[in-house]
Image (cartoon, rainbow, N blue to C red; front, side, top):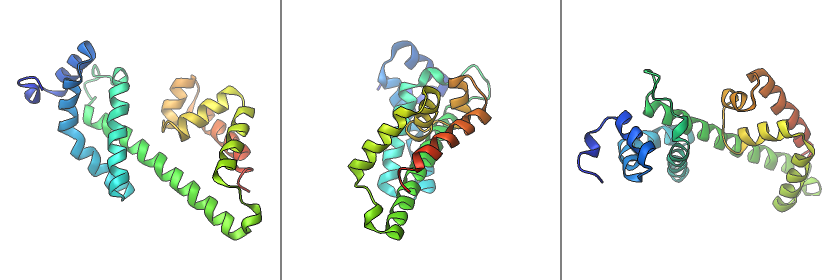
Length: 180
């Protein structure tokens, strides 16, 4: 670590990281905020190991998407941006867990003759995803795989959040047929 890096404010560390791509600048940010991000993930998810994984994923996303952080906005705070990333990842993970629990409950209720093994389900899901048009695919993947919020997806797709909601509902309806 560079001498005095810990004494620099977030804006300076971010500027230096963006300019040099030297991970030492980002490491200072990690050391400064890892405990707070972990505490948030632990509070939202409850599981220690999963909270640790989500903390690492939060910082990996911040590292690779640092250009998206808008430090020109005086209200922008790096810690707040990290917390939004962490929250979105936790909510995505919670949805994934909930979907798995709902699937397992459905299988138990319907009996084994209606169930698919996990590999079959993945093949069916990939096949059904390919049947969706590109806009529906992108919205579904950005939300369920990448953990983007409706607003982030809307910006990326150039549409309204209402349109994103409609895209996700349509995709969800088509994909639910696989489980039922």
